[in-house]
Length: 332
Image 1 (cartoon, rainbow, N blue to C red):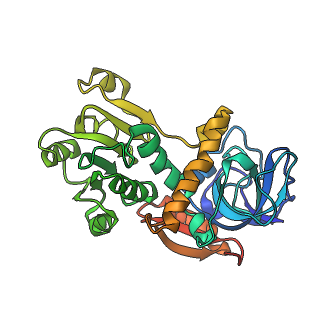
Image 2 (cartoon, rainbow, N blue to C red; image 1 turned 180 degrees about the horizontal axis):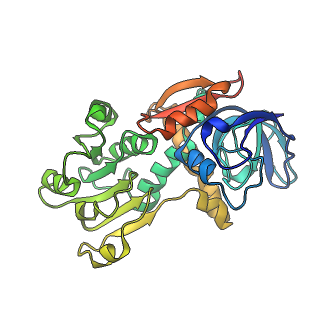
């Protein structure tokens, strides 16, 4: 088979489409023929810095969707021909390839009616938003107090766009933070209030919007956790996707905020079977929402395979709205 490979740490445009051995699934594993993949910030960050577990040439990429073509010993829940989506272990060969091997218990079936190009967009960004809100902050339908505020910082990106929709679906009033050029887009996703991160003290603006109370929940995706501590209501929580607040500042803060680091890859690294299975559960929930028209998958564009390195380079330059998907085969 062929795959995009890196021969050393470097930039996205150094990726080359090269022959590689076709991997065989081991016990509890499946091999998936990939129809589509998406690009994520973790892809270019790891490509640039490498990972201690990688050997070169390495195949990067963590999110994809396709069709099961082989199953390893002990796999009883899936069979060849099943359509699946996945977020793979970033320490292993990834999805920027014609096929990938991954653990069967971490994937989700793709329902009929959801194209594989759509399913591929969801895993990393969608599950990060879902884990932040549902699993960590308690922002879910039936649990969240309707009308309570949720702040999404970096709301125009993949994680932020999904978080805005999921919070609104739970009954929250959403404050979305992004550049002014993206404010109309955020309102379409469900944000009631939009703020520009370049327009002064964000925490003060949030306090003004909420009548001085602050917000009970924050999804922080833009590396501003310390600055946003003052935006959180007493006893509230912050899910941190990009960096944690400064520890001395956090400890001294009077609001007694709960801080939740979010890292999907930790489920793979931990060896915790329940955490790994929850990846598939969360992704299955998201796919069901897409199927039912309750979640916009935010696919901004679908590119052809040869455009993958340039697409990843575009993402690394920042400013991309939603999700960019790359078609790896003609299947959908």
